[in-house]
Image 1 (tube, one colour):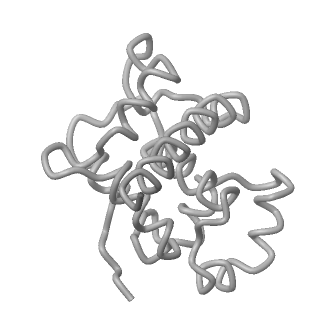
Image 2: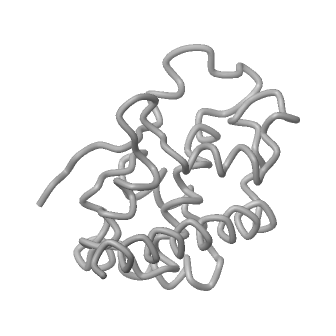
Length: 153
């Protein structure tokens, strides 16, 4: 299994992290992505099994993705958290060779109007913010799936 590190809380809190925020705010963007991946059924079965009851709590909105990353998954995103299709989508959408965050971060910034906030880390970890960005993730996923069909035609 590939354990490749995609993102980690420490990458965001090492330098220039806003002093007015708790370090958990560095997990908000990762948590929203993880939660969307769970809702889209792109998690690896071993992660689902490891999380157990927390998966039910996530589905029932008693926990959110940030909670799970903080308390159960080492404050990080790994490719190994996702099934094969999830890994392929993440490589397409979340990561890139230059900046490391691909179209994911562009969509996150635009959808959640990060330009109007003091920083990326000031995004509210709310259901409304998640719902807005999840809709954008859905569109990106559909676009990616369509590109696969075109490639295989």
